[in-house]
Amino acid sequence: MFLKKNIFICLITCLAIPAFAARDNYNKGWKEFNDNNRTKAREYFESAAKTEPESKSEALLSLVLLDWFESKDKDAFKRFQEFYQSCDNPYPYLYAVSSLPFMNPRQVLSDSEIAFFEKIVNDTKMHGTLKAMLHQKIGEYYMSCNDFIKSKKAFEQMGAITQWQVLGSFDNISGSGFDKNWGAVEKGTPGSKFKNKVDAEISWYTPLANKPDNWFAFDYYFPLDNIIVYAQSFVQSPDNREVIMRTGTSGSLKIWVNDAQVSDIQEERNCDLDIYSYKIKLNKGTNRILVQIGQSEISSANFLMRLTDVDGTPISGLTYSANYSEYSKSNAKASNDQLPFFAEAFFQEKIKKDPDNFLNYISLGEIFLRNDKSYEGITILKTAERMAPKSSYISYRLSEGYLRAQNQTNYSREIENIKQNDAESYIALSSLYNEAMETEKYTEAESIAKKIKSLYGENYESDMRDVNLLDAQKKTDE
Image (cartoon, rainbow, N blue to C red; front, side, top):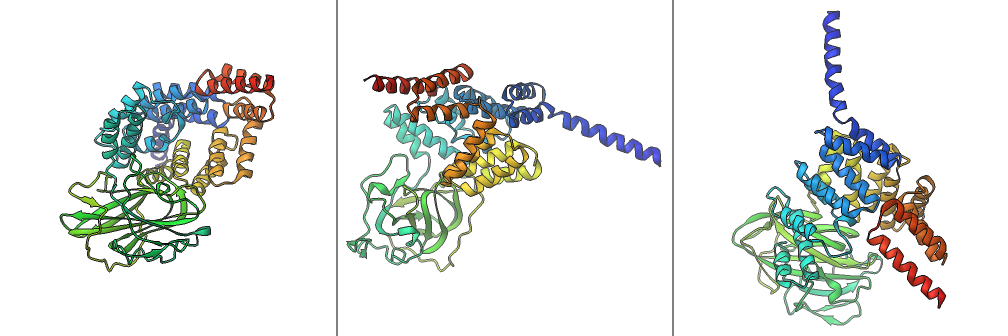
């Protein structure tokens, strides 16, 4: 019995060793990255990508983040393409990094970059939210190239509702108008009369145009000075059906379908498309969709709405009109049954299964930050910080969270931590350069700029530093 027990323990031990060893270089890479030993981290990640099949895709993505953190955006983008091809499920990761600068260069996308986006947007396994996001990016690219035909085609493939009537604006000082009944739910007909925030008589009207990228921007029609505004559209369905209503906003949000409330988001956020999703029922015939957007704390007020299937693909067979049409009112109770967002849910589950993998925390943090969920982003990044208290990368992402939360004190603290603990990092040196420029210490700024270039190479940022220095020195000479 004793012999059998020992054999069993040895067998389990032998099985466990290869499983751990299979990710040895990857784990060592993150240990070095979190200790700010980036050269060593790069060596381990590159080794993992070559010799550890189970770690290959995550090692490549870790190298992407390392490249970006050192402002090597071109390298980061090339490496991300390699990651995308190597990963069985790259889609949540694509969403997580898609707002980072290496995916959104200040210059026009290169031929290879736009070719990559145009290729992957046709990936049949990709979630419809990502496809819509990429169609928007492709449309914006062609707009910048003045190719309006291709731009229009790309924007149309997003599947957004574009036919809206508008009403507004109503008072919303300090968010006080969010729960007030301004009459828009009860009165949707063209002849209905309302009093706006300056007591002028207003009615529903149909705008002549809006933004080509399908984000319905209320600042095209109203001054954004603490307002509540409405938009309504009328959807024709050939039958009774359930669909997923997906909405992104800048501002607080309420939505009614056939006069039954289905969404109630009081916090004002600047978030991406499809973040707020709800299962709704459409009646055969006409259905009224009413959207309320509130603006008081932020400087934007807009939204984009899509009706899709469960995979985010736009529903075919529906037609939309801004013109009022009779509809059957719903007797459903007010609700706010928000569906999980696919990328958030993916990484939340990954953290449960693999709680020691920093890439999961960082990816989820980026998703929260992208959609202005600053509290959630800070919370998950603070968890990572407790595991890696010296990490400049985590401090930098926390600084982004505090900036979004308008917490200047904690933002400054994180940047100072980086400057103190990681003095030759790109972030620390860039901060010192900016401080020297602000205090007109141009000789010092020039010395720092040269150091940044020697350590991290030349790129768009280094070119801009050179231009700004020359401009500042010229003004001083004058």
